[in-house]
Length: 478
Image (cartoon, rainbow, N blue to C red; front, side, top):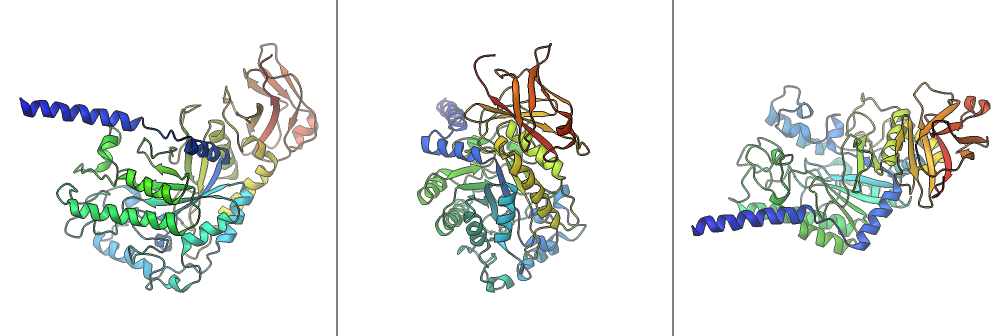
């Protein structure tokens, strides 16, 4: 009976702790204020880069033994493949690395924060970590003799000089660490390959290793605004549910790295730091990060960003296909109209350059942003959020914008654009961003709002891909 009673107490406490922590969102007013400031930025730049760029393969995942499409090794022997993969450190020499060029291109595109992969799951450090020799600055890496060998520091400095917010991507799992993927046992999946409860000293070494590496990033790389943690299968037990439990693998071993300790140290080093412990909902996931998709809901009750690759892959491939400028601008408008940010990723090549298509897309996005940025930065959602091909955004002063998403072959503005039942507008002349033509806003007989476009403007739009109309400030009168 006593054991049963203790079991009930334990079960109750487990459920209580889960509920409390799951709902324990960040309430510190300084942090919530910084989240709002981050939401104002709207558009960020991400880079997945490592030794894998030499092969043009998916970042890290090809050394994971799971039978997944993105883990393909082309039929090669697994052990030999991993050995050769780790030797890529000895040939990695991105001599064309020029972070100032990247920062300028991203700035001109209208991006205002950056997230760089300081360490991905394979464990290779693109920063000068003292905890490992599997890093860009190791003497056996040819780029170590380059004055810009500490790539993370160079990127952060270049983007900081353009007034970007700085985000450090860091993988919680480390597939190079012998205290995560231990040499004594096979590695059946992405998870730790031993039971942390049976080998607590080993797991504690890994936790301390992770803590020290994050401490290096928070101490030695200037002002950091965002700690962007990936590898959501490394998580505490309370955070598991039907969706996330399968992530921890066939053994179901819990991989708790003590986020409270890490966050406390990180915020001591970096005041007001935003922390993104991806998919681990709670206090240390200050905003959420849906991957390669835009949430279907028109409005979400938490801050979020869509992280998406500009090409089909996160990492560099010379033959990859890049999304069209039309698609990217529409994605930005759609994300922003729903209250999110867009973090757009480009994978640099092994020589340290971006693909020409990436520069071209950023240039064309920038041309659009120069005309229409008022409808993007600092905006928030406004009902009805969208109507057909139109997306709506709102500034804090009440100004409403309607963004018409033109089809890729649509070069002429329609004579009339229906807005639907958006509330509290005023009929009369309105402005189209980038144009001096008079545009009329009126209500139709059905009670819906409509924009009427003069013929000359229809044939001479100020930009491509999407057209933006300033509908004026919402009032509380019809």
